[in-house]
Amino acid sequence: MFHKPGVTPASFKGASATEQVPVADSLERGGLWRELFGIDLRSVALFRIGLALMLLADLFMRSVDIEAFYTDRGVLPRYALESQWGGASYFSFHTLADSPASVGFLFGVNAIFVTLLLAGWKTRLVSVICWFFLISLQSRNGLVLQGGDIVLRCLAFWAMFLPLGDYLSLDAKTRFYPRLPGDDPARPVRAFSWGTVAIIVQTASIYWFTALLKNDPTWWQNGYAIYLALNIDLLTKPLGRFLVDIPFVAYMLTFATIYMEAFVPFVAFFPLRNGPVRTATVFLFWFFHLIALQSMMYLGPFPYVCALAWTVFLPSWFWDRITPWWLGGGANSVRGRLSRWASNYLPSRVGATSDMPARQPVRLGLPLPVNVLAAFYFFTMCIWNIRTVNFAALIHYFPVSMNRIAEVPHIDQCWDMFSPRPMSDDGWFVIAGTLRDGSKVDLMPWLADYGEAPPLSWGKPKEVGVQFRDERWRKYFLNLWPTSNKRFRRYLASYISYTWNRDHTGPRELCTFEIFYMREDTPDQYAPIPKPVPVQLWSHWCFEEFAPKAQNTVKPSPAPGVGEGLRDAQTGGK
Image 1 (cartoon, rainbow, N blue to C red):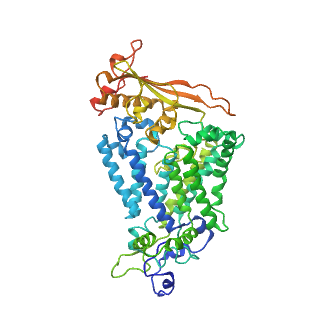
Image 2 (cartoon, rainbow, N blue to C red):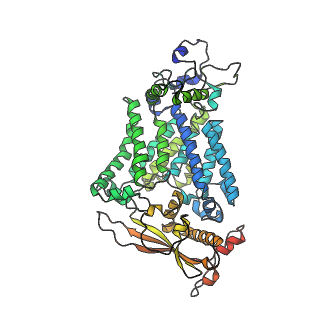
């Protein structure tokens, strides 16, 4: 898209025959496979910038909940991590930090490396470090992870096998290549390796396998799935609630969604006129995620990360068509000034010179050992995804004992969003607290940082989806509802007890509270929704004087190293 000032494609054609040509030049010449599974260097640069911005945004959004999610005073202290991992081969150096200040320091170091990735400095090494920080952070608290986090860590893994720094980066100032993308549209400059194959297939696999896992009749036969999904009040926005009351619209959206996930990714690999066809496919999925899904549901980072994944599909055809428009604004226009600035961060068309003797050639492929490693993990990813479709039948070919092959690099994945059917046990949360002065309050708005706790109310909130401070809290509470995670509820109770009584004394002290899930089942076939049923998830007392007298209770023991303040707050519950 950008060109070095003073050097044009025509002047390049007249270059000396003795000019050094990198061996990698042969990798991008022709071939259907390279067209379908290669990535234009301009798309690689856009992907690098988008990935870095996504990682920075992820750090920023997590930083507001450092104490709650990443310290021993929070909802998942370090001594509970072993039961969270369930024997998986995960690790986290974030467990070395036990205070908001030390965790914040790790966040700051992480942000520095992500900024270097954004600038494209020492990109290969920095991309490895950023991936390492990401999987460590995600492993520190898996209860707040959602589908977007899984996509992000997979993209960060495959990004290490891409030439992220070879275009529009600080690294590109020390690179050379006889021609740049856009010089000759008949010979596009594409990276091609097992790394490019892997990230392209990885993106398509998200949709193929989520469609295979959605094997319930509500998706493929009677069309009730979107009706059920948009009745999940914890996730639904006002537009979604409006559409769910129109049965025909919900019916059509069901089949539009499942057919798009199952079949449209194949269109990106259509061999005839692949440039315009692939460009249309990318824009269709951008619309699907950033407008359609985002306008109807609270899905956190998931739509944005999926949109990022599709940037690697942007073909050379797209960039060659948009470049004339971009450069047509004139030398003094904003686009012209941006082009001149960006041209300083592109590879040179000449090799080493007296001014820059250390220039290295752009490598459109990978060194053989790295390419073999990328191929190995590509096939691992494929086999892992195939196993998720029918675990019982395929476990013999990929036994659980081999899980660590995918778990160590964190490419283990399961695209079971709303699978095999959307959940029908919808509801909202109420935390009924009793203060020392006898008043009853609902602690959920206080926990969401909406101010002081209001008087207790059992009525359904006007918009359940805004009941949480952010997407991390939403996912955390959704993960607390299943009985398989009930062992983690005590840590939430201890956190509530500690944080409230740290800031309130005297008659406003919190003495006891109960966590309820107001379960509201959604039946099929648009039947009337029954009245909600309160389900008690946890009962907690903050001081021994309020412990039940009719039963023997055991006060939970904090882990070694937890401060005395936390010991006083971690009183009983059941």
